[in-house]
Length: 465
Image 1 (cartoon, rainbow, N blue to C red):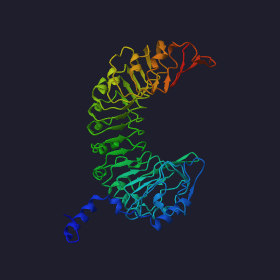
Image 2 (image 1 turned 90 degrees about the vertical axis):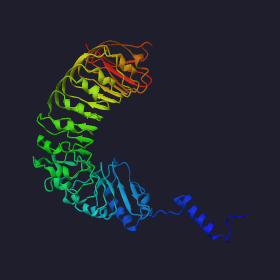
Image 3 (image 1 turned 135 degrees about the vertical axis):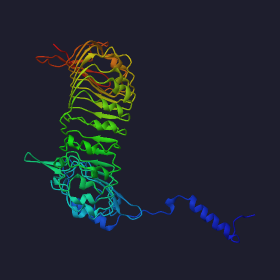
Image 4 (image 1 turned 45 degrees about the horizontal axis):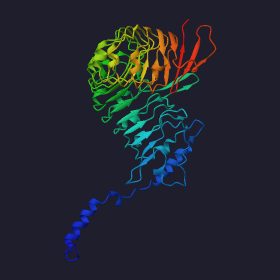
């Protein structure tokens, strides 16, 4: 007996509805091609571009014969309307000019990324407030200069804004971007959705101590903030202390005159902290041990002195990268640093650290990839625990006082090793396979130099006289 027949229309309707849910949506959906206005605007935009030998593309898909601009390089469209919603030309090193009139005809843009190109130097064009749907704007590493236009403050849907490193050298004069009128408070006062703000090398120093509560109250969702090399002083601490919900903070390249940003110890969600080149001194900050989620720490190019606290290795258990390069640190390295479970990158170059590393026996880091201990005062044998760190790619131990015999075959288990520098130490190199792998270079007045070639990497070293 048939369940479906012309005499049973209710069953027919039931199965039609059922199959409509079971069939993939692509059977019914169509993808709209880009609209003519956006096609024309993009072609006009390309007409202002110049493609040199440094350009990574000539945008060959951007041509009048290919009428569906949704298929062009760097373009994404809304499939239902055919409107261009993403324009990403980042890191293509295109020169020429930006035709702002054509750019601002793309009124549906949600994401615009022009970073790392070489357009002609100019102020940021006015008119960005026409792109009211923008959620992500990246104009970093472009030769813009002068005042950031007020129109950008009207982009109230922005989630990410990056204006970093946007200065231009002209006849040895630096012409940076600046925030004076509008100042930074005016710029962001209506951007309540902003999660990421990057203003690396934007001059905002004119504001001095005028940063007030309105600055942080207008940014309740901010999680990533870079004010690197912005000409700031410690007068901003009281305002920045309110951003205790940040996950990433970079204040590098500002002069804080040794006044410590102790408020950062309350930033319990912080995973990335950059304070390099901030004129900080004294012992390494103890407040860091409160940052249990910290993954990346950079305190390089300061004047920190004294030992590295063992608490860093005992309590900062999520650290993946620690950079203390070019300070005045002394004492020995806490063995706990070599036992951090997630540590991948350790840079202690250019300090006054010393002692013997070969007495450390409990190193258990399994993720370490790069170790930089150059230009310190370490003594004794090259530590044997290094040969057990199986993910190592880089070992740099130059300009120390290591001594003894290094057997080349000890490095053989380190299959990922691509760089090894043992130069300027008191080491003897032993090759159990004989001398066939040694290639001698002309000796300088001070150091004989030998290059040793192994199957997976090269080692260079100099022997102190």
